[in-house]
Length: 102
Image (cartoon, helix red, strand yellow):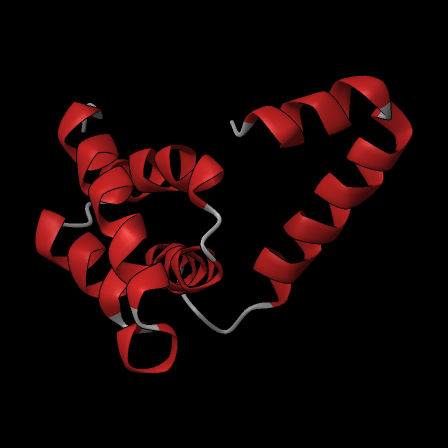
């Protein structure tokens, strides 16, 4: 869990619950399967340069059966639009994948 997010949940538990509920509703309402949803979210995090939460989501993806190649491709999907921001996320994502248990 990203340190900033952990701090948010600990300091504002009611807001944390509300945010978690919204996240669950987005996932529940999605037409995407869970693995595809996580790959898409990884692409968004990478494009925004939000590397703090990558480890959590990459570990989730590995448990869902995502390959290292799928993780790499998701990180780089935003490369044409955001350039180096996506490349900076690549190392963090692949390190997390290599460290995660399946």
